[in-house]
Length: 169
Ligand code: FES
Image 1 (tube, rainbow, N blue to C red):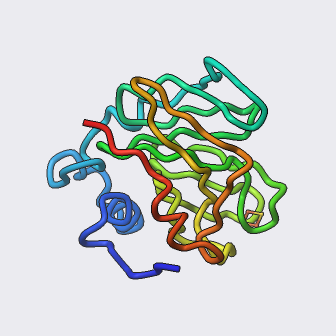
Image 2: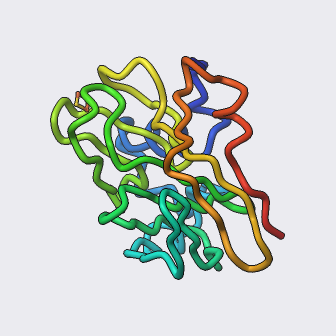
């Protein structure tokens, strides 16, 4: 698990650092990248697959940064700049609690034990010992194909977890 402190280099880590330092109000002035981009916080909504075949779900490719949640299938599509991830909605700590999105902090949050995760699923802090689980995902034209039967845990399948991303232009 990557717990490298990144308050000065990671956009979301920096956001959390600034918030905890009561400097968040200056973010739009001094920040850059995701933290300074209000589009991410505003772009959170729900999504349903355009097609489903067993565990394989097809979605429209997210056109902009943000999180789209398919609550019925337990899938979050998170686009962070040019990377799209298919994340599980279930907290990796107890595997029963559903995560929620905190638009102001731009984090996923577990209400059970107050854990926080970056938009790409990386653990920020809390009781879990790994990041949010990622589903296998690939691009098919303007669609995103997610296999919910292929779920990767960061600590058990580090390589597969890291590769579970689609890059978009
Ligand atoms: S169930 Fe999510 S942090 Fe414990």
